Amino acid sequence: MNVRGLLFDFDGLLIDTETPGRRSWEEIYREHGHELPLDQWATKIGTIGTPFDPAAHLGELLGAELDREALVARRRARHRELIDLEDLRPGVEEYLQTAKERGLRTAIVSSSDHWWIEQRLEYLGHGHDWDAIVAANGNIERAKPQPDLYLEAVERLGIRTDEAIAFEDSPNGLRAAKAAAIYCVAVPNPVTATLAFDEADLVLESFADLPLEVLLERL
Image (cartoon, rainbow, N blue to C red):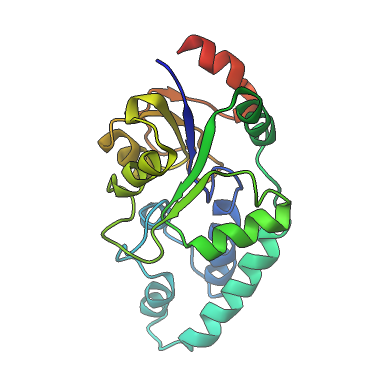
């Protein structure tokens, strides 16, 4: 396998935004005497447009109409507060450095929004480390688990699907990469660690567990 490009998911993979995302809703649910249903929450990870709506679900549990706008605004503020404490996940910086040294093309491939990705990367000082950023930007039809984002990414990098490695932290992302016929390494985060990654070509607990040089040698 002649690897020429690395394709990284964003939320939960490069930065653990998933733990703050879940925790911010868990805190609100517990204040109201309930638990966030983790099985339903998991359907939202790595994609957009899923039917589970935490605010509406909590209102149903309480049998009362909540001030949705105020609830969501409060949750969003808490989410941002928690995310600001997060750095790149262990081993990510080393992967990027090795990719640069070896002349590998790099892209972010995400179901999120372009503005969100750029904002977080700039905050961490990694806004210029990428050859391309491909995001769904609210388009459900392009979002993972559809392969569209990955196919666009390899085209923009000027490589073939069999010359790329995708890195994912969610089953939705994994399915998207495999549907695009791209070798996929799963690196789950604390929120997705208990989910199924049977389709992955390789599963790592952390980027730090396997240096990129070693991975490339194996391939």
